[in-house]
Image (cartoon, rainbow, N blue to C red; front, side, top):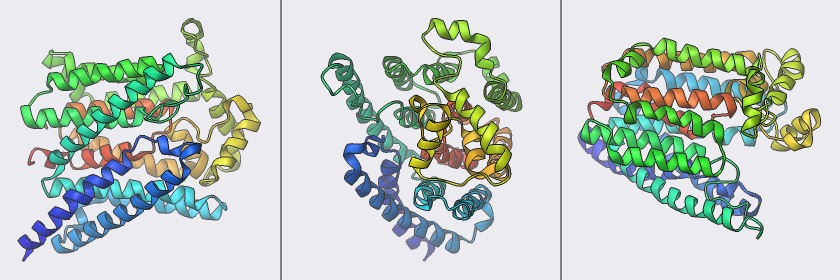
Length: 399
């Protein structure tokens, strides 16, 4: 009976899970002003497939009776429920909050289901093909943007205006590396070529921080010194403590101003495109008055108007451009404490899996997303995709 159940639901997870991943990893072009109707269709599809995956997940848990094995998922649910309550208490924009919230929970459920039903790597192979197609289209639109800069189409970029393509690139690089190790017990030339393609794309659009941070992939891709790799794995605490320290130095102590001459040479400003102004404003005005609970998830117009009035319209944005500061801004000290607790638990999980053959690319990816989180708000599906992998890393060798 259980076997028939597994076969039936495995087919459902295989189809619906793949479609949901494609929807959650969609590049972001449909967020633009000219595509509201298409974006609405995407949102409706996401809700439908999220409902299916959540239903399958709970049925699976009931049949298997293994509710005790999802600590991180329960912690994330507690975090999102808390954020939702704060948003309601602060008269925020609950519609803006609920979509990303249920997407994050569904992503963890989906990763766990794919791994439990031995569908994880077959699904990743299909996702990789999708990412490759996205890259090709995106690359040609970047070239078109450069060539036709004065023609009116210079703002077009398939993976989203500005730097939204960073998010699909992150998941793509990790996915390719995991499939390589699963199939060949090593990272192959394919992942190395993809790394260079991503770096070229980031260079063309002058996304300096992401381009520099992505170079960390050189460690698993090109460095053959096994002792160096083992040292990195054995010093997981040092790696993540250094990232947290760097975050504090840049955000609170304005480390970037110490390198103003170098930044100016490359045409960059010490305030990091207005980020330092945003962070200072949050610490000076938001934190003192809303330290414990934050202001909740407010509307996009509220955020843009607030930042625009405080630091100048040229830097009008709808988020804090730092993962931890954005959480403090919206959900206060309690919110960021819950989030950091989840991150620390995941780090402790990695420490227990030092001999796992997938540990290095996962460790690199975790480091990259935390480093990117210094300069951007990385609360998006790729983060929860990674969290799901980290929490289930012990099961990857069984696939």
